[in-house]
Length: 202
Image 1 (cartoon, rainbow, N blue to C red):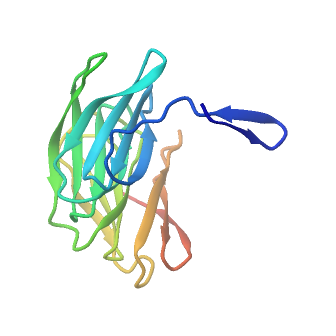
Image 2: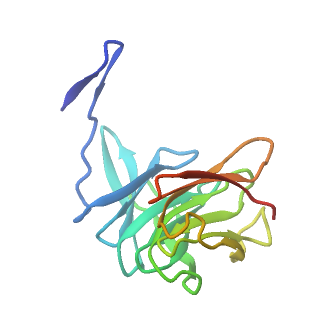
């Protein structure tokens, strides 16, 4: 195991090295309620990891994107996952079969007709079970997708978009501010070296 120091106040150690991806890992995100980890990769897959005794094991591999997956995020309860890809699409996946050594996730929606270039970032608002999804793209546009039912999964559709959100610059990252006050606020960051704060009104 590798050990390292963090200043003079504490130490950290590498507990596991997960090696099943075959190309760059672009993002990792924790499940909001369980000890599960999702990873997105240049190898066009998403992998779901679970702690298995003293180590971590891959319990699901999600395939369906045709190119690099740049970002992933869970919904409020972690029953669904959204992914963003270099194939100009986002996908929504549902957790169907849960097991100690294997899980099954199924793609329940693909949105392909809104983006003209790579989707670099995606964030799921967690104020309600199925809140809006915001996506940032290399086509310089921020898009928000909403479901007609905030309590149960129903197909998402484009509800708002901001063209030239960072001028002519790519949108590299977007993130909701999740709060008990249910304010629809998110931040974006672009190639223009700027961070912008946005208010969204459904």
